[in-house]
Length: 366
Ligand SMILES: Cc1cc2nc3c(=O)[nH]c(=O)nc-3n(C[C@H](O)[C@H](O)[C@H](O)COP(=O)(O)O)c2cc1C
Image (cartoon, rainbow, N blue to C red; front, side, top):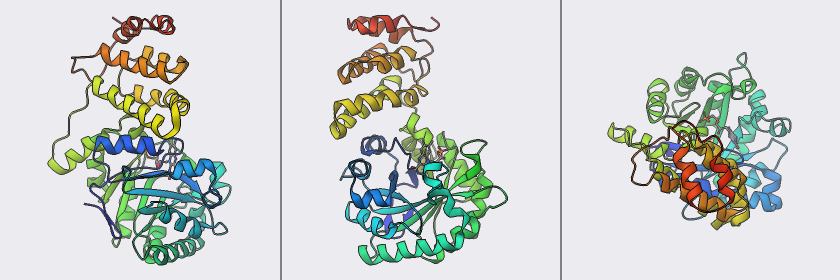
């Protein structure tokens, strides 16, 4: 199994940091499904951490159900990253990760994220300061890792050399997303290039990332690249049970079965309830209105459910809609719905009048 510095993970599959999504409720949803070796917070601004802004405290929150937790920080050499890393250690991080891959202007224009790929020398010095500070502060208990892209553009494929320099100054593992900054999310992740990083840096675990959306992809990425672990982002938003299924494949050779629609909807309900527990009903409703589009992609034709959640006035109506959808598939072992009609009819049966018009929307083929 994957070991990062002194931290032994129970699986070599990791939930990626996904800004706007990987709050404590979602991380626990993925962990409860099984197969997650480590889960990361969204990227956290070092200044905001030290000011303890409400938003950042929310994002950095962790507890005993969310372990081992990775906290990801971003910033540049002028920012208080070493101090923020110590704050993370004091607030439950078992691993501190430095973002070297974010292509979004808000981050990269402030010299954080992907811009760190443009000056490998300075970035290595920065990493050394963070590593040394965290080692002293945590007594060597908490490793520092980095997550990067292949480089800014294909003319500057710095990942192999930068990862090697980072390993030399004590970075305990490097995650490589197999795209360049200029690509954002276009094209496909270059797994062969991730393999080049693995070859260049034999001394620490390299974690591959990019375009793993099926259990077999995790196996294939390890075969192609030789990476020690696999990090998953977007597919986790659609299928938080992917880690369990992939872990079964990696450890037993057989992929765990895909959950039924009823089981998938139970996960959706659990996500809703956990978000209420941590953030209250109002936030839970807002987040589920955003998240149901991702879950919907794993369920086939469930447009009436998505519409019901999108238009629901409050938490209680969202919960009612999900329960109605569950009742539509009760007793069935279907994993996809090929028609919206069962959910539409179940919504109508709730007697909740707001759902009546939704139930008539594009219920889909019989
Ligand atoms: C909406 C969104 C937000 C993201 N936020 C972060 C982030 O906060 N930190 C980070 O290192 N990467 C972030 N990423 C990149 C992912 O962690 C991952 O590297 C990328 O999506 C490729 O993996 P995938 O193909 O499994 O999605 C984000 C990606 C998406 C789609």
